[in-house]
Image (cartoon, rainbow, N blue to C red):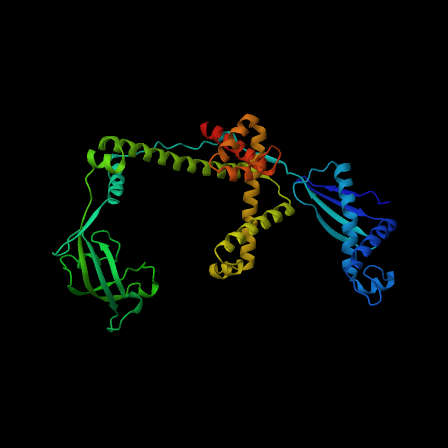
Length: 426
C-alpha cells in the first residue's frame, strides 16, 4: 500500500504532497503501462502487444514507461489526497518525479490564497460633472453639417475653405526628385492644416491649371524621419478648385435631413447626447480608477504556480491576438526589440497585477455579500440573447443554462457590476 503522504501547507494556499508508492503498487501500474505502450511497438513475428515482456522492455524508452506508470497511478492518488486532505484546488495540480526507487512524487495543489483588503472603505473616486458648453455644441453641429456639405467647381483663385485638387512632386536641395513624395489627384481643404505648415497657404490664389513651385522645410517631428527638418521644393499643378458650402442649421434643413422638428430641438438633442457621452467616459474613468485602487488595497501572497498559470494564460491570449493580425510572438519580439528576459519580467508583473485584482474583487464580493438572484440572471441572459436571430439563440442558449460555464461567467460579471455600482455610489 502507498505510504502515508507527507503534507506541507503554506499560508499562501500552496499544498505540497510528497507521495511514496510501494513496490506492489508500482508493479501493478507498470504492467498496465507496459500493456498500453506495447500496442504502439512493432516486433517482427508478434502481433502488437503480444511480444514477451523482456523484448518489449528492450524496445520501450524507460522514461516513457515511467511517465505512463505515473499516469496510471495519479487519478486514484489525487482523488484520495483531495478527499482526505479536503483540498479545494483552483488550478490543475503540478506533478514532479522526486525519486525513481522507491517511486516518489511531488504533487502541488494551489488553493485560493487569503486576501486582506486594507483601507477599502477610504476609497473615494470623485465624479466629474459633465460640462458641455454652447461652443462645444456648435463644433459638433458643424461636424454633422459637414457631412451634408456641397462642393462646386469655380473658375477663380483658391480661397480659405476651398477644396483644391492637385498633382505634385518634391525635389531635394540638389534638385533631385524625392520619389515617395510624388502624388496625383490629392485634395485638400485650405485652412484644414492637414498638410505641412506653409503648403496650404502657398495655394491661396491659385487657379485651375496653374503651376506653382515653393520650398518648405519639413517639421522636426515629421513621421518620415528621413524628411525631418529637410528643405523640399514642391512643384504643384492645380487641377481643380471647388467652393465648399456647409448648409445652415435651419428648421427646414433638420426636418428634411436629420428628422428633427426644429433647429433648437436638434441642438438640445445634441447637447443631451454629448452630456451622456461625457458621463459614460467619466464612468469608465472611475471604474478604471476603482480597479487600480482595489489592486493597491488587496494584499495577497501569491504562490509561484498560480503566477506561472496566469502567465501562460496571458501569453496564450497574446499569441491568439497576434495570430489574428498575421504575426507570431517572435515577430512581435523582433518588432518591439524585447529580450526574452524582459518579456518574462513583464509577464510576471502583469500576472501578479491581474491575480491581485481578481482575488481582491472576489474577496470584496464575499465581504460585501454581493449576490445576483435567479430572476436577475434570467433577465440578464434574456437581454444577452434578445439581439440574436432565432437560429443563433437556439445554438447559444444552452451555454447559458444554470450551472454552465458561460452562465457562471455572466453571473460573476453581474456581481462585479453591482459591486462597482455600490462602491462608486459611496
